[in-house]
Image (tube, rainbow, N blue to C red; front, side, top):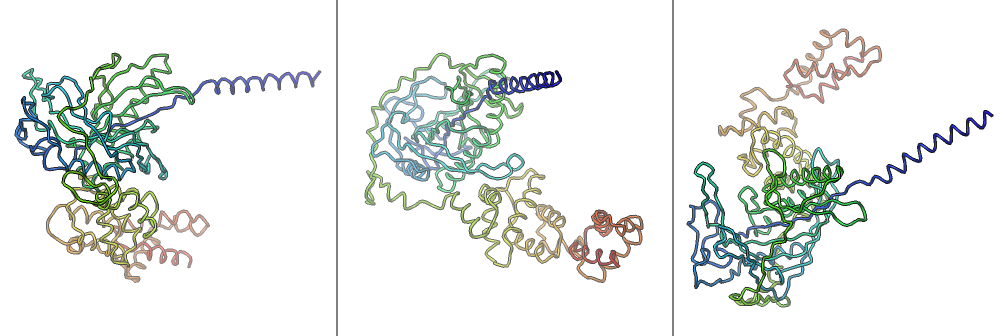
Length: 520
């Protein structure tokens, strides 16, 4: 009877486990899928189809040609420099440059689009079938970098629209056509990303690439590079659900935040049994949410048609013959600079840096330049130089709300600091304080500031021993505990020593001397 009861209990127990396991298996997790479309403004002196100046921040409606304003009778003239920069970008992203590409008219009606259509390359683009390889690493989010890639469907040349300015108080809208006709390349990526951090890492890599190429300034705050993100959800092995598009995201962290919020919003709706609307949304960077702009339930007919005023664009794929009429792709390929991925590989190989440090350095071109100049002197430890730049310098800059690109410090000032730190004449804490003082722009050198403030480390052993003896005499309880075998209190004694001497002791020597005195 006992055996029967036991077996019955076991049967009941295992049936509960099986039911729980079956139900958890049936409840599938929602997976997110992200695809990007990026518009990068080409870094040329004039616009794509006119001779008007291509600049940011000019007087309103001051850089507008007759063609940009869609005056009847004006015709487009293709800017060859735009084609060259488009091809250079395509080659850097391993795209297939098409020997023949054509221009199309994309019709839609906005107040800031004078012609009522945009000239683009929807059907036969400049390049197609590329790939971008990048590393995903966000400090505080990822423990270490991992490799990711995204396929590029196509890269096309197109013109930008103008800008509408809405005045809420006067209740009217004004139009600035300075941006109308500005040269763009649109990069259409396949939906093969999983979350906002991957999308942000892709955009950061793309910014670094176009900056290295000189194709685009990459200044997202100026609208030189704008991101549209398509987000949808599905269960593994099932078709994608209805997607939403987030338009004109204007920063790398904004890309991560917008996509993260949209994924959570869609997951919440789907888990609640709701339906995702096919709509365009925008990112509110202040409220950290996406907000609806317009629905896309009715498919808009852009009425694409060939651009009658522009012949097909033909390029030379085979020879390095220079011609004003036909651009040589091999000649452009010869101008390719070192790309970010090559820089990371060299940093790891030549300087023996950890991958995450290499990623962070390459992500900050100004700091990378500092690093490469400072480490020309072989005696300087590359890892310690990188740590000073990424930890100490960036920490102080962030506190002052300064970007690395606007860092006013010179290479010579940083070299002096590195040498003082490596020679153990100052501590890390003093290093940060000195950087803060240098940013005040007083014109003083690092050594002048340190001497004036009395921040030089004490390395004299006799003086350090005196300080250690004082700590031992003033803390008999901790000393007794240490001698009884509680060695963990040694850190507490070191902390007291550091505090009572205002962090002016060389703690490597101090630690050694304190331990010697305690063991006597």
